[in-house]
Image: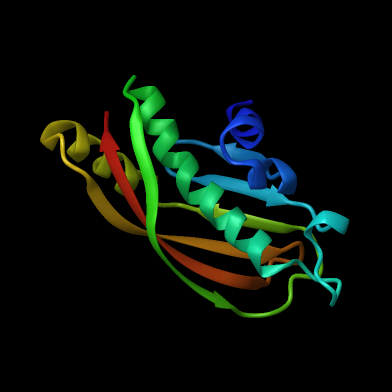
Length: 145
């Protein structure tokens, strides 16, 4: 629900792409984006901008998850991104990030120090056959308001 509301009110691109949260827990986030008219490029594969949105959402959800759990309001942004597009994504894409422990530690450090904390996390994008289509490294920057 939070993801849908963010797409409507805060970041319209997320609303346009319509990512779906498959799973979230203390260690993992899994998000799915369907390959459809809105997400395809002229080669009938997923547009690289949509892949970037998927990586953004996947890495960012953990920060919001832990801030909600700890009842704090984050000031959250991505400072940098590295990406490697391995092959064309010609099916729906599943994004995963399993660095929850690292992100939780980053949020706790931001609470303790009251300073902005930056950390790199990895997001993997796979097609429905399980083949990697893209690899992302996102530098998450978190400060508690």
